[in-house]
Image (cartoon, rainbow, N blue to C red; front, side, top):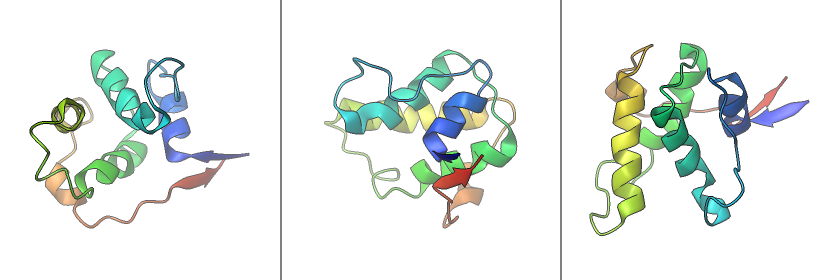
Length: 106
């Protein structure tokens, strides 16, 4: 079975999260909602999965220069920093330029 990185993060987080939770806004908000859920539940995620997941955010062009008029970008940037600081801690700068595998075979 193949899973994309977001489904795998949702499944392997402790406590687990829901990927694509109904009612979370437009479908393209699902990744933002997942990150926010992980922060709010103080979820633990294995470092080997946490690093590539956070690399997706760090390497997005809006990460370093979020649109300060967009509350989603502001919240997401803040959540990425908060999640990185949670155990196991990840240095976001070390993820710059990291290539991320988006689909995994289970």
